[in-house]
Length: 497
Image: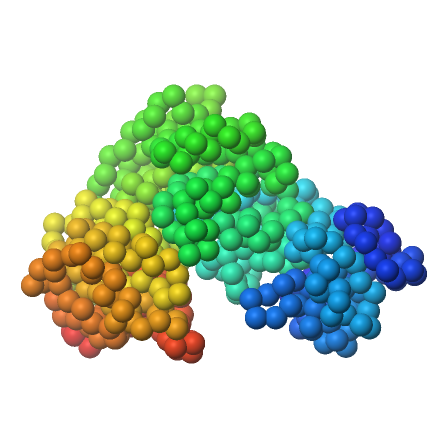
């Protein structure tokens, strides 16, 4: 966990207890100083408060002894965890994970309030919007931080990302590091899991942005209403000062009805929105666009980004960039140079006669959108490779299979990350109810599936690998094997040439 070099003065354990209304049987809370917070016992440093939460296999409080050896001075946990701690002072709250972020933000003196901070949520587009925001800000000479699925950046420095949204103490510490290094902005993805699991506890954003919502993560949320509710919880004064909402969906209209923030509306076509496209002219190598914004702003420029969904992402990024104080004239000059996020319609070019791309699309809607975008830009066949993840929402598998078949000329069904499941059963569920044409193929070995796709490609065709995007591994039977779609696709192209 990255920590700022500036030392935290520390707060007494009593002050921490009063902040979060914790109970404790320990009498001498005034002489214990807390200088940090961590949920991971391995990341504990001297003076830290160890936050012990219930896990899937064991309660975090069972690691209190290890945390003490690493320097923990106290434990923040629930009633169950408190019974497991014997040799450290304990603070007890009903939801220690939620309290952890509040304490961490307080110890670091609210670092996110010292930057222009933006949280982007939605089923699709989070990574691309935050990446574009970071690119625009950096090109405009505004040092900025980025936290997301692919990577974390502090200015130009890259820090590996373990999850889309870090745990709350890690997030606050990272924000403090960014402030210390004079970052002016912080752009981050916020997943529905992060909201539900209180990973953004203590966070406060200038803007919460909503891109879209479609079926995904129902293995965690249970149904679409619960999934939506998790996203919607971000759009309250608890977490944000204002909202930027793409209004081009049923779910966004529902969000508009229930959220309580000042709203800026984004739309590809609705002229009554605050930000919209006045003109879109798609060309062979780029698209000419005219963006109309608040106060009559007009930004005329070009973009190399492909597909309507990427125009949506760009529009959101442009609107927020203007809100951050960047001159629209500068944005117009920067936009032609913008590139998509890593693993999002990423091109693999070895001089072959067909196009080859890798994309992270792993929901029915995102598969449909990506294939539709490629259909608009190619006159040849679309050859698409797709699998579904194991130990995840099974209800979307036949929907994804149908989207693959409907949107491609050659559909290759394969493995994604089967995890503990049988890859053959996953694919069987993907093709359930489908009548596969002779052009379709089922190949469980993803490497071989990629080779099949490349072998089928003719000049002018498009080969696209869907689902894994930037991921560098494939999890099979609990073991993560080195596997990068981009490298495998390049190897297949090279071997076929």
